[in-house]
Length: 480
Image 1 (cartoon, one colour):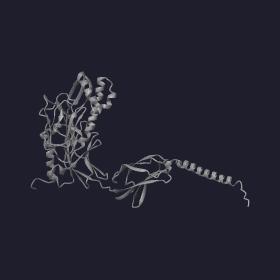
Image 2 (cartoon, one colour):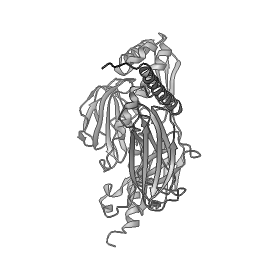
Image 3 (cartoon, rainbow, N blue to C red):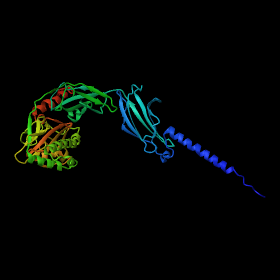
Image 4 (tube, helix red, strand yellow):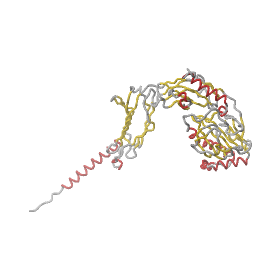
């Protein structure tokens, strides 16, 4: 039997194959053009979903708008869609929908959640964030967060009728926060909250008054009542905020002035010492060789560095009373200036720096011990460019004392000290003028006048008498 091979069939099959692959290729190209996805990229077949991270996570929804912020990222095929919605009683409300993101690797979303505008009622709601990538599988991520909706705000009741302070000094106010236990509260001024503490940790007679608080607050040296007005503020865990006016007067005071004169030899020695400090290593390349220019730069940069380093230990305060009564001076002599006095540093008569002194200097004729101004806990011991060897003691309730220009420290961080205990020795470290100790009182990190804390009368009038007034108001006279 003879078989004959037919011709032409193979060419037709090839034609069909070419047509098929052409249609598929055209489809891929059309798909890529419409969706901005590259199907020939290996990331198109990835299986990793987008990553959703909170940058500002809401704790709940209250009477005022609550800001929330999040970031969605996908390092593979990129993002395709992000959806944010909120649901209450199975009724979802779309807040944000971003479609056709074109494979962008990240998307930031910020929303002010206003529950009243959204028509939400008090109770519970669910916030949902969904994100999808541009892969073949459209990988998705989802975050669901339950939120409490609560419109009730705390209420503040001021107890002490009047707070009379001096600019550059300190004051004390007692108040109640009623209706809710606050997440934070205190005196608010110029964008800063000076936190308060439960009064029961200040005086045992208030142990049954869980809603009673007190705040020691500074009146900064640059306080301007026209723009820095103070008020009491209480915020609950959800973010509901209540404010209340309280009566205060900030009396102006007269500042003195003093100067710190350097000659060329002392200026060169100071420049060498500041430039040699490890924190200033990166600054050496910016030194010009001109003594005046370099000292101005090094002093300002070192001052910023010292303040930055001290900000953390100055914020490490305990909400319990660590000190008792009047503070003592760190040495037996008297200070050569007051906190707030204008200090001018000159080099051969040319001004290098001018500004208010944050503390007081005690010059001594010979090296002597430096004593703790009151009982407390040491939060910092180290050597800084301008302050030299420095010690910080926390006294509780936001109050701290600072000792600088020391030659040696006799304590270490975490150590409990008592009033009058030797903690170091006077010295000439940092920007010292002579054998001395430099002393500051800080309240919530803000420099305040030490003169008040050394004054028996001020302590009696502004702290002890106020506490006694609150005791009489809330508890009554003894025996009643």
